[in-house]
Amino acid sequence: MGKAEDILTQSGCVASRRTFMGGVVGSAVASWSGLALGQPGPVTFGLTPVFLDSDIRLLAALKGYLEKRLSRRVTLVKKRTYQEITLMLLSGQLDAAWICGFPFIRYRDQLSLMAVPVYNGKPLYQSYVIVNETEPAAKFSDLRGRTHAFSDPDSNSGFLVTRSLLAELGERPETYFSKSFFTYGHRNVIRAVASGLAQSGSVDGYVWDVMNSTKPDMTARTRVIRKSEMLGFPPVACNKSARNSKTTRLITEALISMPEDNLGREVLATLHLDGFQPGSDSLFKGIASLYEIVKRQT
View 1 (cartoon, rainbow, N blue to C red):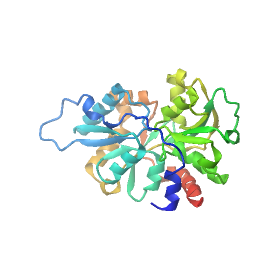
View 2: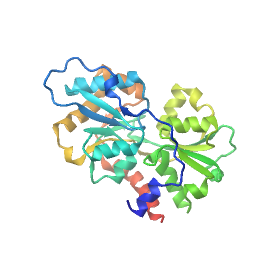
View 3: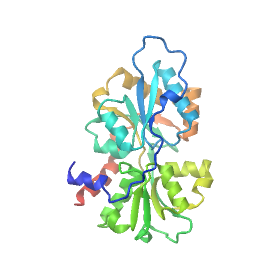
View 4: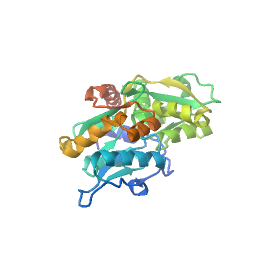
């Protein structure tokens, strides 16, 4: 790994050792009963911590919907970090994965876009900087010398956006904050800031907004002080070598057709999404620009 990438993966932060829900999830939920014997192996679909909710009912609904549409068994794979899922996708161990825009940009020569979620009518979202309700901070510059929580070193909204902001100031996390650490989950960032474990944090605005609507007790002790520009929503991608495969085509069609199916609508409603669209790589130009800003800092 080169020096530029070291900047992004080694922020001088002390990593949290809390275990997020890891491993393969699919075996814990019901399979669609219409599958015939002798079918090909299961379709493997990866989910990073950008996935809003690890509720077993939601996972069962997603699994059931995909199995019905694909007429194949589906295994949902969840890991603690973005990197684990990304590496599985790059090595061909997954047929598709819902990843983040940052790893999609970093490995754009090896990955192909399949679909992009639509949120509030657009395939876009924002990164938020939040603070504990007791903090007097009103803007980002007030956070110097504070303790800051990041989500994941491969997260756009939970790391890259703030990292690029610091780079533009000629700073790094270790020079700007008194301490910073990774929580490995956007909801964990909210919890860390709400509890006072961190005085501020970088979080996915979509996750914060949905939590603020559905679980206001989780966000009640936090306050948003900065919102980024609109950026490409975390996409579903596949290994470029499989972009023209039948499985890739069927998964893409299933995601885009979700609003037409009762179970698909249930999944979308739980995720607070309007649906999925094919999207284009141009949606992620903003994230690519942020990555370039950080790479220029040596």
